[in-house]
Amino acid sequence: MEKKKVLYIAQEITPYLPETEMSIICRYLPQGIQERGMEIRAFMPRFGLINERRNQLHEVIRLSGMNLIIDDTDHPLIIKVASIQSARMQVYFIDNEDYFHRKFMLSDTEGAAFTDNDERAVFFARGVIETVRKLRWAPDIIHCHGWITFLVPLYIKKAFADDPLFANSKIVYSIYNDGFDMKFEKNYKDKVKMDGVSDKDFAVVESPDFINTSKLAIKNADGIIMGNENVDPLLVDFVKKSKKPILEHQSMEDYIDSYAEFYKHFLD
Image (cartoon, rainbow, N blue to C red):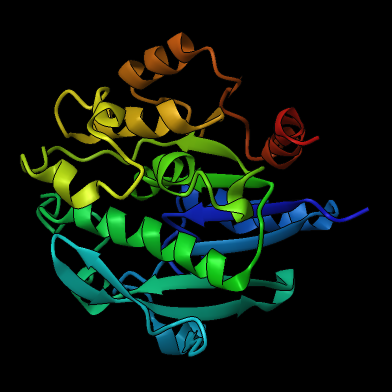
């Protein structure tokens, strides 16, 4: 029997970024699922605070070289990879000088969110999807962690709805307390939209802020996991009203087994 495949798309993974609940989960969950007999791939942004030399990142030439057009501007897609030897696991990094070479993640030292976070999320989501297509690797489950992945469910369900590689993919979205205080510009939808994505797909985004863009991810996901113990009540309420399968927050001792059991909702 062919192994089930789980694609992990993460905002943070330790040891490449400091330890948080999200980065720890995204480090040990893929390893735990792999040890339970599934095949995994893991992706994250190559944020500028990641030390490439210490972590032995190197470019994957055969996967790099594509340009992604965002707001009528070409942005080169660079793919890098590193190995976590103790886990026998590789991590792919989505890199671009315009979006990911600053020394912070979503906000600067003053806590102000970057005004181009919407474009960065577009580039990351499309970069992961295009790389998986190049790898010809068809995931059974796509598990998204963190706000920067919020467009992946929309793109998979709408823009890539006819791609046989994702025909049977089910999307799990983990919600965390990784919010920021800002609204995107009015032309936000123009930058985010792709062929197959229509204005009505954005109906849930009453104003383009953290809460409503997170709702967009929830709307297009097949299942939801509460990644932190105290998720924003507005998102908790939206998830409950969606009637989608929900996994409540799990302890650090139990989450791998609980997540593996939750995946069974979506596997044949």
